[in-house]
Image 1 (tube, rainbow, N blue to C red):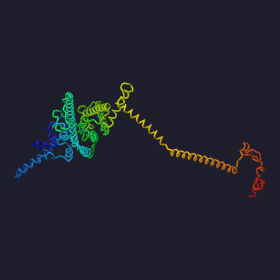
Image 2 (image 1 turned 180 degrees about the vertical axis):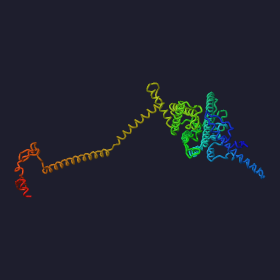
Image 3 (image 1 turned 90 degrees about the vertical axis):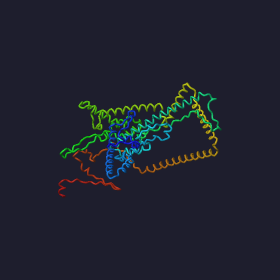
Image 4 (image 1 turned 120 degrees about the vertical axis):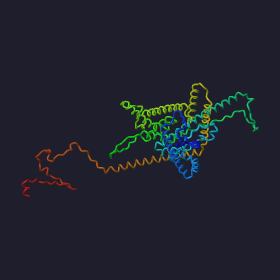
Length: 524
């Protein structure tokens, strides 16, 4: 028995995510989720429903034997809403609870203003109030292929919803603009005497024939742009990196205890192509892309894939159309290379368009945009005035007038200040000058006293100093008393053995006689 979703089940929120793929899934400008991932998730949900239906059938058969079949059948109809969630994990429920339930995307007021049709919103798109909660689930709990494929499906439906809302907004804005232009043209064609007037006292008079022009509201912010700016792009960058990194596992050899290493594709490798296709069509935000560093991840992965393809072409042993590699998540290398090239071309073209708009319009959305445009306009006016092409504009005349007023006010203030100098201020200045003059005299006197003291100190030190006469060149060296040179072996011992003894009063001459060797031996 196959469990087919009933009409009541289809009215439950998120039936587009839970059904068996019987609904028609539209294409949004080439941005489409990989069918393999969608079938993978939907097949698991259908399998859970089939298992539940089998269990229900067995229980119904058992209760029929006991005479309780009618009671159970009545309970089955009331629990059809719970049947849809049977087998779903808590993470699936948390992710899908962040999605839209099918009401108007921006509330009842928006629906009344722009007359939104029923098919404008998409079930399964992210709600604005659940953006931060959804990003937290992406970062902390989505680690396997099942949860990440569901997140990518929700992001794609959110992108579809944003595009629908923007298209509907542009259509409504153009219609309102044309309506206001037609109303203004009709009023201009009427003569002044036939134009409707309302008396100030008459409050009951109404203009039934006059057209009512509704001013358009500003465009609602893109939900996907808010998600990507709130660290969502960093999470997608990490997912791309993890999907392209192979996994090394230890596999036991048959019949032996030895273990060999085996390189396998990443468990989330099947999500690489859907991620790249999604990134190609996201709203371009240069600042968010640079901060998340996803541009570097795409660039490095593209270089690596290009090297793989060039190496395979050089060897020529494989067919590139069907060749897969662990570094591309087990997917065809040519398909991954093509997706990477499309992303780079798309981002480059969008960056150039944004750069041109920023240069021409000075980004009026920024706080300084209006000021920059105003300065440019006035600079052009000044150049035209100097060249004599135009007369002075009103703003320039006002500026010159204000400058003249400021100069006159400054001159008046200086004159008033000069008159207010009283006799007391003059006396105070004279006293200050006298005080400074006296201080200068005191400093000069102290300097003179210091010089005199130094001079006296030098004179007191002179008598105690002993001045040694300079030695002449003739007194340099050693001379012996006997008059012979120092290298002479025959000396005049009697002269050399004279010793002069100096005391305080006299100088004594003591002569020592030399002893012969024989005398020395006798004395010993």
